[in-house]
Image (cartoon, rainbow, N blue to C red; front, side, top):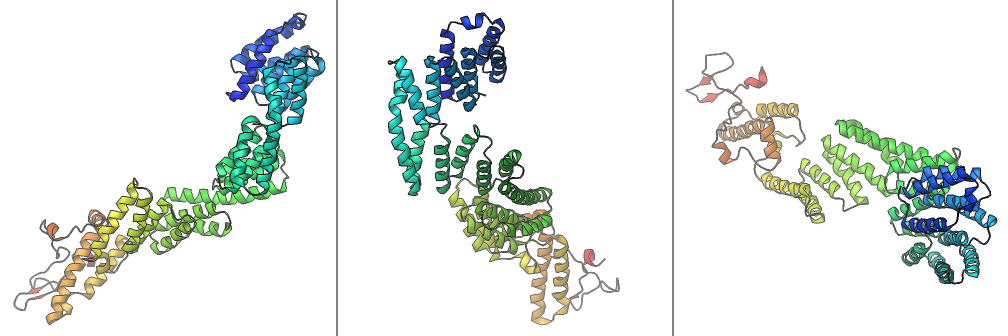
Amino acid sequence: MVPPIHILISLLYILRDIAGVKCQEWLDHPDVDRHIQLGRELLTQGLYDDALSHYHAAVEADPYNYLTYYSRATVYLAVGRIASAIKDLSKVIELKPDFASARLQRGNILFKQGKLDEAHIDYENVLRVDPMNSEAHHGYNSIEPLKRDVQMAYLLFADSSYHEAVDVLTRLLQEMPWDAKLREMRAHCYEKLGDLMSAISDLRGILKSQTDSQLRYLKLSELYYEMGDTEESLNSIRECLRFDPDHKGCFTHYKYVKKIAAHLKAMQDFMNEGNFVECIARAEKAIPLETKVPRIMYTLRTKHCKCLNKAGKSIEAIRACTEALNIYPDDLDVLCERGDAHIANENFDDAIHDFQKAANLNDHSQRAHDGLKRAQKLQKQAKKRNYYAILGVKRTANKREILKAYRKMAQKWHPDNFQGDEKATAEKKFIDIAAAKEVLTDPEKRQKFDNGEDPLDPESQQQGFNPFAGFHHFDRGGDDDEWNDEDSGEYFYVFVDDFE
């Protein structure tokens, strides 16, 4: 762990002070001297926990030596244990009141904590014994201007002037980074401004040194949840319960977030497995549970939309996607998802609108541009021959549904059922029905058609399309059910593949 720069600077000053002190106090205690030397070496290597163990041993061996406490304070400072560092520095001052370096370091820590009145006393004491100490002068002279800025920050916050308050608080926290009240005030400002990530950052900064603050962990969990991050929300609320398992607010929030997180995980797992029916069922259970937090409401509806689309329920998918877009209108992924649903429902104008909006939001989105081209092709195609419409099936129909519709339409429009001019119309219909079957039961041809390209357009037909390939005619008399009366020109078509 590398400590912040202000701690490193403090360490340099303290190590300088330790190095400049004659260690006569340690000469009578060789064990103390050994622990101090080892601790100092480990400290310079950044091995703070190991260094701390040696300083503990030194203090235990000689509990009345101010230098051992002073040395240990440096390590506490390095690992962020500010309260312990102040305690050791106070012990140093108790044992050696004229040790200005300890007063200066304690004053600096109190200053950074925003305890300006206490810091003022320490700086005054340093200046009495060392009037030319520039560091003490700087701290001493900064206190009154900072107090005025603190008062201004509170006034701006009370007036709901959050932008202005953030500016003042940021300036203050550069000087007093360990002031928990100011940092918490800035976190509230960020929350009011909708900058939840910055609010979280400030709260986490406080919790590094004040780990037993249950209400702050609850607030942190609520912020993560508001961002839609249920896993981090659970991690934070568990920290609250670790300190107080019976905390009512934390436990209630934990149960609620855990339930929503379980639904979201199950939905994602079902999506990954391709089990879209179960995904839809989970979504329908979860959606009514959350009515206040937009990000969670949006996430549930987005997953619902995707699963409905994958399950071929295009009308329901359009509705779910629209509900999600009512919350966040400019989400490219959901716009494309709804565009796909519109295509499946043959609402090509609406599909073009969604994909065009998505492409405008992100000109580099391949999905948006591909979807737009596909919707435009299908719109043109719809004005020509629509194989789905010919058979009366949806674009999401499977092969079994297509064959069933094909048999029904083929029987309905069988040319032998018509006479005269109607027979010519039926033959044309019959050819279209056969063409629809050929395209929609061939995965490759169907994919081309779904992408806006007719595989049986006039140019393709030159490559050998035979509209009567799915049925045969035979000479009359060759079989009781299959005949051709050459004299009358009447045909009876038997669909060999379909009536076996």
